[in-house]
Image (cartoon, rainbow, N blue to C red):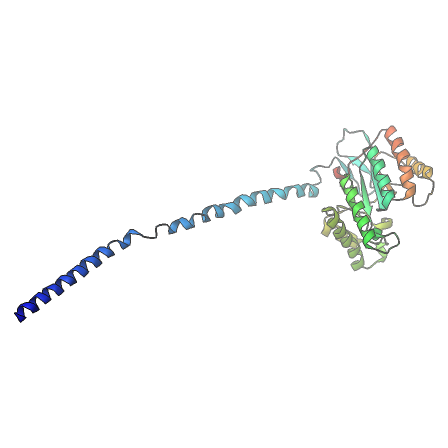
Length: 293
């Protein structure tokens, strides 16, 4: 009997071990049913992201193209200015129309500037404004109020379709200044005007027409064009608007590059002057269509 009991116990133990083995095997066979098959899906978004920069680089290349015509004299220029006499010439030999370019120096100056702009609008005439930095205040004493007025006037000139150009910061004779001072007079004014209009000035006119080799170097570095004039209005000398008008008309010629100033006498003289020039058949050229030889 004891031997039989031991045999029964041994048989039960063997049976239990077999059951445990069977259960464990059946459980292990279910584990591979849930593999991480979704892992590759996480890599899908990287494909379109990689292609996006390729599309963005194409518009950025195209946006640089409008800068090229400014460096290509033949691109849009209907007129050109010779650097010997600074007269305006038509690029089309068959064009016999009388033409003139209007320019104003030493601005902007408050209501005088606005009156000149209104008169130009009346005759649908565009012009180049060679402005100075010291006009934060005519008394050479800048203030927040004067700075705000200066910025507003420069923006108004720009918004009305005129060209804002560089006439130095202090309006000194650059030939009498050091190379460093000459450079600063030009580049600081460029920076100021670009901050206001969003466009770097294209034209430069030295005060008193006093040109120098240093200016020539800066012009090249700044990608600018130097411009003087062929007809002076002498509005800085005359106090009578009629004398200003007579001065211009008596020296007028086809292709005239007319120098005027942002002065009260000029604001009074401009309307009768443009009226007479229009009646004489003059066309006021768009400054954006002018290049310098």
